[in-house]
Image 1 (spheres, rainbow, N blue to C red):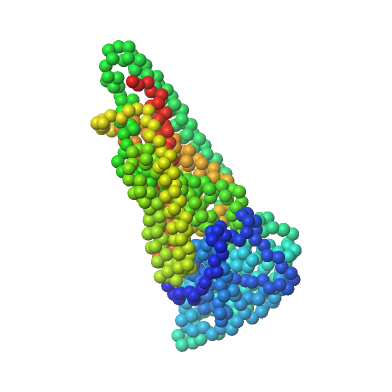
Image 2 (cartoon, rainbow, N blue to C red):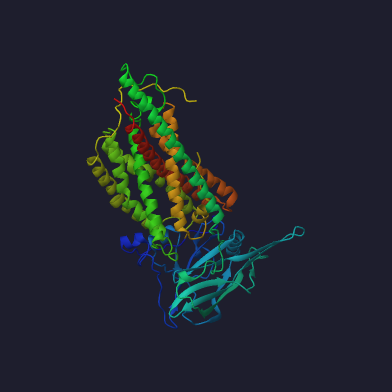
Length: 589
């Protein structure tokens, strides 16, 4: 939407770098609660507005023609809050701890027809607002819209000019906050002439009540009034069904492969003993299947530098994803603190860059790579360059539309500094250690100089993505980290089993080009994730507009790419371990 003007200038007083990256000024998992005395002022911050169905399309609250102080003072924000699109500023609301207020005047306004039209368009697009009191969000709709009848058709639009604030306290702490317009009549915005001004008086009421709940986390889910729909209920039948399918699949692959491999090894080794006791001819003669390609199966693939970079970055994201889930399981993310996971992800990404450098350089040197510097540059660019290009497009669209999701210059410089001073150096350091610690490639079979001619060549993972998409592209904080960790482990296990099975079938067909195919076989799940995102956007969401669409598909494509790197890495190393196992147990001269 472009009817809103660009936000007024604002600044953020950054905290020290480490505390900023963590996104909190408190110990992990500990709620940040302010203690008040009776009559102490309670600051209410206005934050952002945006279409209800477009979670990532948000604008500064003061871009609307609303009650605004003469000088806007912004709250200092953490990195995670800025990345989340927060732009908190002090408001005109005067709230004091445990002091009720009944219909106090906030301000008087005279709106021009242009400002009224701006409000009408915002209400028609179901704009909601977000306030923050003591780190507690308060949300409500900007106005009221009524569509009724077909003949005659009526279209009524009204603005909420009175807000009721309900706050619950326990002792000297605020436990719960909510805003409502119950029993309030909206002010009509219909029938205004182009040269006419609309006079408005904004008012508010504050009601305090004591609660027996001692901590915010003790409140039952859904007690916040349910402004946003709840989508994260646990469907036990669906979970059990997925578990049964996964265990059957893994068991099937394991049993079948073990039986087939046992028969293969027994037959090949028996043939080898017979050939050794007989004429002594070439033991390849008369063989078929995966044994006959033992002199080619460890022939290094083309584009080995790119392959090693994929494995390095995939290993980094495996560590990053595992770290985020483990931190969440340990309670290190406060659900009442905005952007904590975003900050932790940035910090972990920078710190785990050493893993990508080490894995890539170590394996690159093992398979005979010589261009070590080029390999490091490729490794550090494999994700950062696509991410930068995607972010540039998305951020430009947000900036052109005046959205708060557009990052300020100070935040961009901070992120660039973190990558230049932490991420890139750690990649180089990891690469140096990986190169120096690399030994020769441990191949159970010798590789012939001339490649063998490949003869003509004559599984399932089930992932329920709806709840994850509803969280990432919705409003709700994801809290089912135990289930997420379990599903993540199942995904990796199933990916490894599928990769082993497909590699075995490929080798049985006397095709030794397994290196890249093992990466692509399970890594192609990333393509499935992107295709599901298209289905989710079209059939499971109400998102619309260029801002939300560009962000959704841009970052969905990037997410599919990350899953390709992660699952491709798991797939490759599982296949490599499997191939080493079967050939090291094969008796050969």
